[in-house]
Image (cartoon, rainbow, N blue to C red):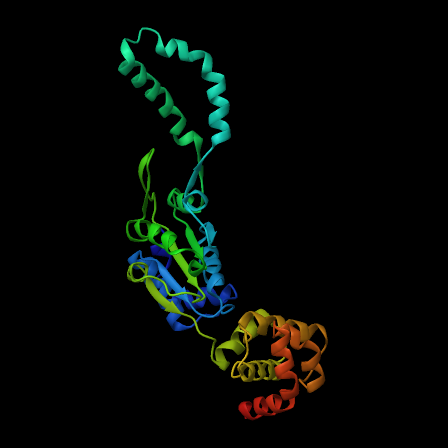
Length: 313
């Protein structure tokens, strides 16, 4: 993996990622460092919106390596993830070469020799020029390495999870018509999971594990300061404290970091100088994505606001 020399230490990663606008904890920086140096995939787990996908994007940006993303979903199979044959092109070439079949078969003696010649002729259509690469194969073919993001692996079927094991352990895949394809330069593989289902032990054994929780208040303040630098410190503290209060409630979906950032940007556009009940009620739909949650929180806004103020003291 040619990118290992660009990563000297976890501290080096934290510093450079911060310059790119991604504030990461020590555990995140250490995981990226080890994944690159040990050439092992990272399985990044945690609730939605805490920066799992963004980690892959920033790693790609920092290393100046192409980001190849495969979005997982139920029913995903090899044809969509690894490769597919260009059937239309194969059919077209078959029609164009049909007239040459006579030359191929001329002089053949018996059925066995005829079949053998046809077999050799057919192998032409299962060569590299008829292969349509998909994300997994594309990542292995990058000469200088790539960042392979396998996003939301927990949404894929267990059969697809099992299919990934060869790639994750040996950085190679098997194509029946061609053979084994090894990575030209091992990619950095980042798998993300929102924990909608339990992943298999075999997959977990092949990966470094990283859990990204909701950040502590001090870290979230740094994140918002990085993403919304125009916001004043006082309002930023109020935003973080109130969001933290919301995360303590029994909601269908608590606000993630991405919602905190969106809310901060919205408050800035609305020229809000200090949080109060009216502004919170007006913009609550930016933090909560279910109407049931909004209806639960609305009567409690005053109490939550009071708690958040005490939290900041």
